[in-house]
Image (cartoon, rainbow, N blue to C red; front, top):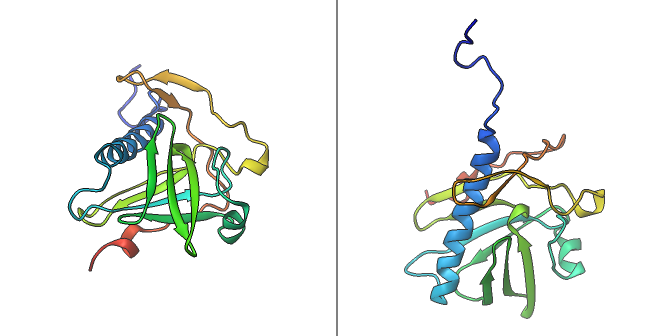
Amino acid sequence: MERSPGSGKDHIGYHALTQAAYRGIVRAAMEKAAAMGQLPGDHHFYVTFRTHQQGVQMEDWLKDKFPEEMTIVIQHQYDKFAVQDDLFEIMLRFGGAPQLLRVPFGAVTRFFDPSTNFGVQMEPLDTRADAGVPAVIPARRTSVAGAPVPAPAPAAPDATIVSLDAFRRK
């Protein structure tokens, strides 16, 4: 007996593929900006990430000030912007003092470039670092480009979906 379309389980893992693709877009945009040494034209990035996600490195007082999520703006005043396969690092100033942030792409939940009205919303790959979750979720498959596609993260019971409309120009 044949199954009708839409009645079966997703054995391909479209959700995980979509999340990996979004992270790939974010990584590629950041790589281009880092390689140029500055963001071209009017481009600037709003990047929101989970501050207590495993692998996030920032001063404790910043984590205390932003206990769940933090949004940074990458535009004019930044330094030491570098992108690796699994994370980015950047030096920003908070209260005039330079602070180095290291953020795994798995901790990024939103990315928005208002100059082009482009944005994506993602689920964090892990939960909070202090919840005892492993730092890396084992890859189940490999994407066409050869990058691992992580298993989808379980939905957090207290997850809140935030619209990017607040960042869009009216």
